[in-house]
Image 1 (tube, helix red, strand yellow):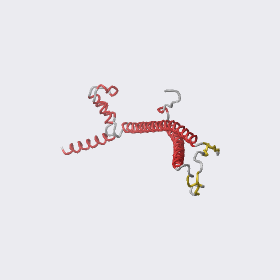
Image 2 (cartoon, helix red, strand yellow; image 1 turned 90 degrees about the vertical axis):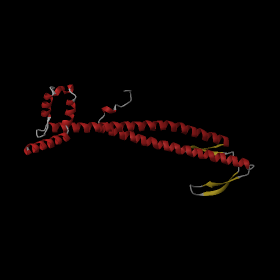
Image 3 (cartoon, one colour; image 1 turned 90 degrees about the horizontal axis):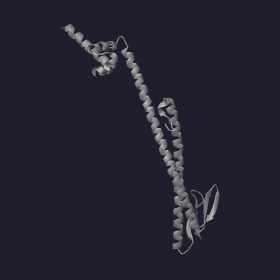
Image 4 (cartoon, one colour; image 1 turned 180 degrees about the vertical axis):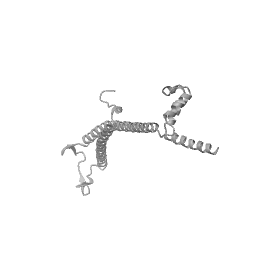
Length: 223
């Protein structure tokens, strides 16, 4: 196990559940960050497209003022004209603006888009790793649950096997092993012993033997 990794097999079910919640919280947070970056990328891409359209249309109109709708709010606009399409105010963030030419503004937007794209790829790798971690934890929790259920089932079967009222108990297995000239502790020497040991320890076989004994008693009475 490398440094910084967690051995999931050594954790209890409660610890695995806490770790799962922790990783899911990190996954949700970083996924929200990824969505914000993609939204910012889309905003810069729209700004670049508007810049290109404005400069191209102005050059084709022989430097005539370009008519446009100036937004005052998200739903309120006023008509306006752009006289100089080579000067733009670029938002640098935190309320700071700087005047740039069309070429400089386009280069600025492209740099921002490239930076966001690189950060988005790094975050996507982190998201994939977190998803893998959550899946691994879920698989470990499922394994723990199967182990707990198997242990409980084994204890239940063992109690039933030790029940003196059981129609066919481990004592009968001793007789069966003696019949095969084998020992119950070394019954692996005969292929039938492990098979019978597995079958005799199930409730279904107990009920089956009980029904057979009842049938034999009934047949004996009839004879």
